[in-house]
Length: 335
Figure 1 (cartoon, rainbow, N blue to C red):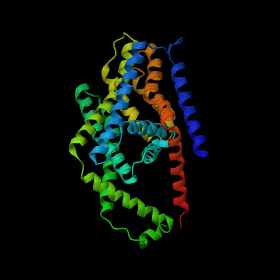
Figure 2: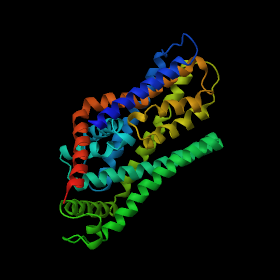
Figure 3: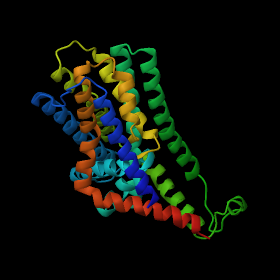
Figure 4: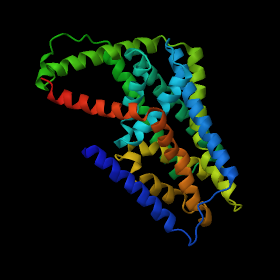
């Protein structure tokens, strides 16, 4: 119950900060944008979702599993919904894992598919950031923001892989060793650890036998989905105003803001995304177009994912979040 109250308060903060950003602009601000802006932004949204779904399907093929595109689409959007209602997007992977499991994907296959997808995400982010830095000659502040986001994400994903590889080479005995007993890893807790070790070992083995043809296609789809997200703000701004606006900040800053929001310990960003958008782009986007750019950019990069994710897999995502909470409680109670 406390978590859901926190989620509700966080979304209230998001709405409150958005209202503040809109009201602090020029009087009589109009949030309407041309139809062309909506069409371009929606096309970018569709391209991003489709590319991400293809990446998941091709990631499965790369590790010798099968995943229909329809299931990939549902998994991606359901993960977005789970991420949006949990702190620091922690509900994304449990939601995606449960959707895959309910679609008939074995647990071992689901784990390796999801990690492979995360691995390609880290690589594609590094490629996109490098391309953006070269093409747009990013400023020191913007480049530092991008480097921090991508570096942190890459270290996390690679660190998971290294940890998994190390653990996969260890044998787990039926009885917990002395060090495990000292930290109360015994009883049902040790049984959970044993299951987790076995899944990690299966994941590492499948990852080592990756099919590089499908892996290359998955990486290409990942690059496409990352790049598609950063065409939305330019499409909205350039369709809304005739005032000259530099392209570089419209591409660079959303990258850091979108991926940086993942470390904010509040569902939906708790207003941090809106504040960062205003701080970074308040002096770049013309005043008469700023409010509409913020509201519609946020809609096409956040709210639309929540709506569609809730429609296609909302119940499953909610059950996944509750199941993750139950597992945490079970682990804490286990003896």
